[in-house]
Image (tube, rainbow, N blue to C red; front, top):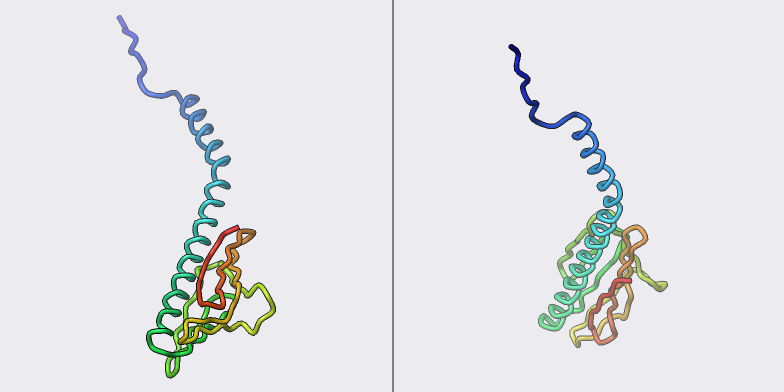
Length: 142
C-alpha cells in the first residue's frame, strides 16, 4: 500500500506573493529614503563648511593675518600669506554667493569679516552659511 507523504515548505504562489509585497513596499519607500539621504548629505556638508570657516576666523585672529576664502561652485580655496589650501564639496553639492559678489570673502585679525551669505544646494534642497561683519558664522537649512 502506498502512503501519502505530506508536502513541506512553501508553495511557489506563497513565495511569489510575498516577494511582490516586499517589492511594492520598497517601491513606495525608496523616494523617501533617497530624499532623506540627499537632505542629510547637504546638512552634513553645510556643517562641515561652517566649521571650517569658524576655524579660519580663529586662525586669522591668533596669527594676526588676513585670510581670504575664494569660492567656486564645487569648492573653496583658503588663501593665507605664503600658502593656499583647497577643499571640494561632496558631489553633487554646489555653492554660490547669494548676492552679487566677487566670490571671495576675508577674515581679518581684528575678528571682523567680509559679510556674506553662501548658498549650498543639492537638487531642490538648500542650506545657507552666513558670515557677519563681526566674523560670526551661522548656518541654516530651508
